[in-house]
Amino acid sequence: MNDVGEPAKRRSLKIEAIGDFARRKIKPRIRLSGHWLEQAGFKPGHRAVIHVPRPGELTLQFKEDALGSLALPQKSGLSV
Image (cartoon, helix red, strand yellow):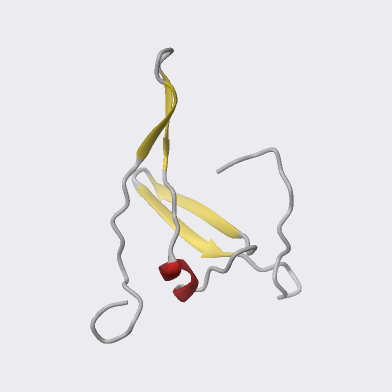
């Protein structure tokens, strides 16, 4: 929250390195967590879509299914 009780519009996050450092198989990771996510409309269990409009820029958007109801979390072998 900022001084007037509104959610902050910007966040500064560190891009972490994860993987096998000995084999030089390292990849970047960004972790998002905090009450500010809920204040921005992202609740636990909801799904989000990440768009990459150009290198160095990500857009995170809440996802609803085609009927307008909340999309249920699905198990997947993929990780983001």
